Length: 434
Image (cartoon, rainbow, N blue to C red):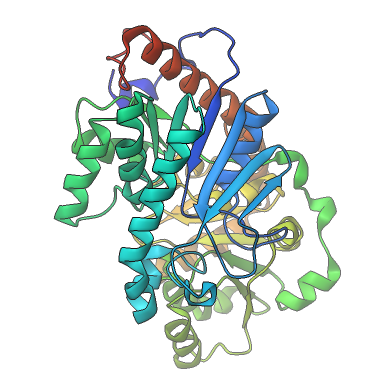
């Protein structure tokens, strides 16, 4: 069954029932919180905690970072971090924006790369050899998927890979070859959106694809968390707009800034707060100056993950003007769970969250005039505002809660373990029904 057919089912996550097992899971990733309150994405940790909460033994194998423990437990998840360069302060490849942006901006990150690949391969091989695992889950096909498959195959362990978007949106010919190699040797590829699933299908039409998005904890969000102090720090606009994400070219922040003077003609008190960091910050600052909106834009920089629900709740509108590569857009889910309406561009996985006029408004990518029109419409139309928030909250509860997503991933992992034990192979055959 192909991805588009699968997602047309009444429930996108219904899968074949499997027996109840408690298994040992090795989770391989290159992005993971380094410490409590870290601004690094926490979705890998959230997934692992959901699996561990169901009685499974979960170990996360992730890159080391200066000043953090090599081995520790975060709740019921064991975290092992491998060093890939000495001294630790010279490890520049991972975190703080991600591997690809770091490679583009830092010569030291480029020096780190071959050592990182060797260290990750050795760490995964050692963990598989001595950890008595039942299944390997690799987040991102490159590099975690490659080393996961290399280590798991001799041990006859099934591998579940997760495509988060950037790893399959690539046009790089070598990366596509490597992606196909990983897919053909994996039990299942889980994807975070329909668009990611379509791209995986193009890479390997025979790949077994399961939709398992990233999510939120709805109970940790809500307008009751809104803060006068945070709103003032954001600019205290009337209305107050918000962007949250990496300051990279693909996020389209300059287009949002260019839209701001147009929005101000309709909404003179509007202000925009930008939460994030990344390689495009200088360009963003330059655009703010050339557009003459210095008094309307506040750059807040990094915000700890634990403080994000209050920032979401304190805004009147969240905007995600991505250009092309957007695996899903989790910030949209966080905003909707907070009772804040959303506008996003019609690219990548964003339409999985925003149904135009139902859970938000979709704008054309790289079109400041259209971004402005959609923002003004959402703010001025009280009925649309209220309706999209109500529908958005239901969507988050029904499809994007971590509890729901954890159940779906658990079933997939257990099925791969069962099929592997029955067949003696790390890759199961095509499914007959869903």
